[in-house]
Amino acid sequence: MTTRACQLAAPVSAVLTLAGIPRGFMDDGCSNSPDEWFQFNFRWACRIHDWRYCTRCHPADEMTQTHRHAADKELAANIRASLPWRWGWLRYVYLFGVWRYGGVNAWNSCGPEVGTMCRHGMPLRA
Image 1 (tube, rainbow, N blue to C red):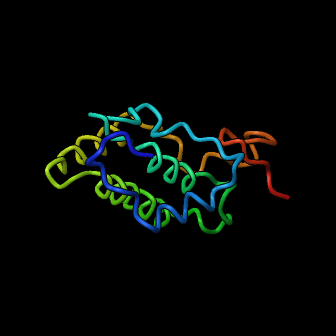
Image 2 (cartoon, rainbow, N blue to C red):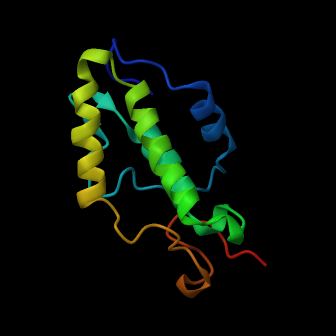
């Protein structure tokens, strides 16, 4: 999961979340933002973020703007946790890139209108 010797480990909450994501779940990292910068790998944090954004992975009434805000804050916290303090500035640059160039329409986009399988490979719930 790490590509740099000084990179910090993922928080326990992130490890538990990653363990709870089904094997068939497909993510695209942080969409149009690179998954790795200066040899710091953010792919795992982006996978959690995609999981939080997928409609089919959560109860319908859970996909509120509060949930979205919490998912975005979790991404920021996970990226911050994966960087040594002297690289903290990179978090702001990266999060701006995700916000500006990421999947703008990715939030709550896996409804029944996309078919039996969503872009994350998750089946339509009965």
